[in-house]
Length: 309
Image (cartoon, rainbow, N blue to C red; front, side, top):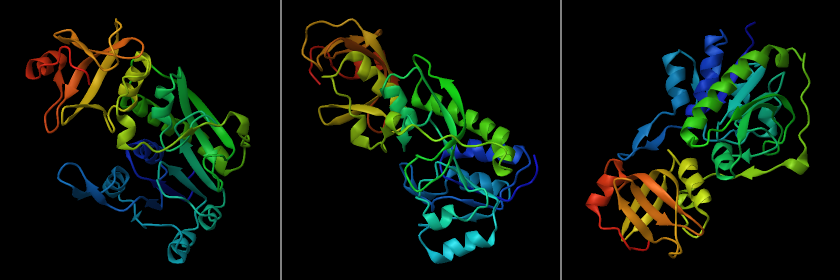
């Protein structure tokens, strides 16, 4: 690949796949934009983003402005004279003053088949909705939320039992490959971007911890999808007395007419909870401050049978 002048903007692990694909293809960005270091983990130690760690390891200059709505930051980016800015899950809004800097514009690697699932959590949204497939798009960025025209896309099938973490890794890898494949044509304007159909747009808002609370009043299939969608972050959970219990694995089970949230069984074959309708069988659970355990181990620790969650 010819050596274009590239600025890369990204923050979490999803972004690293695209950045790594660029570096492996011989495209070393002149700078990486990533969010400022923040407290993370149980110890709340100030930690660099995965993208920053990768960039430092590969000798790429790192910029970490708290906002891009700053004339000094804009001037610094203009001075780099980029051909293109590649954005993958950066997490900060790009104002028009930044969108206008690169000669070939700003290109977003987005984890869905746009216009379906615009927004911050497209992978989780696809699983929650029961979609059989999702994908990744290369989108020309505009001032709106993920509504710019699309240069290229790749479909990724969703496994029947696949978690968001597993799907995330496959979509991220597909995005890196797609980026390297089409970047030269995008920079040289050899392909045109296709406008999205606004009538088909759906939205995937940022996930907050309360969103991951399991609701036994929902059908069992929806509850199982929630367990998959919130694995590994933030982790689907329910309350047991004053403890927040996380559930990492679950499947549909045979239920009965018990009220939603009733514990129907608990033992080596799993902890079975009534839903409305149906039931789920949880096979991996975690108490606060403890490691995840099998359902058999959990049932041995806590008397569950007949309780209503």
